[in-house]
Image (cartoon, rainbow, N blue to C red; front, side, top):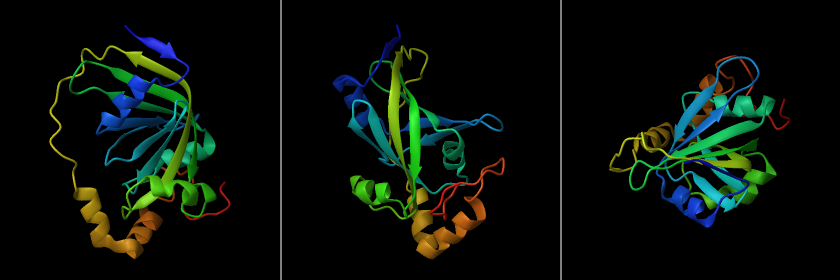
Length: 184
């Protein structure tokens, strides 16, 4: 049923491009494990062993804090329509902020969305598929506009104030380096 591969195949890359949602998992040695759903056309496959995704402003910033301490990450995609499939990508990631050269070189891959917080450059070590036969069938209706509307109502200054209040530390008190050019 499941397979392990060293890289994405063209078929798996096409599968990823069709998914309106994916999940991100990170953790460090101690503290909470983070699993977050992501959407809004925020992921790009660069090649068979590398993806980059745009991390938008959220209520927390766990992924950033975790990656600064332990750069391992898992991405998971599920087929909610069509043939069943679960696809997991395992690897290491680096996080880049608006003040980093990587950001300036790669941000044009994404739509200009207010509230863009970080870019995550993910290098794939292992690709694993599994059956997904217990994942429910669901119809995709549309992207939610709430986060975009919220960011537009806050404006750039309001978002930066929100980052200061909610996005500078993880739930466990680890720094996210959102404003620091010299990361911890």
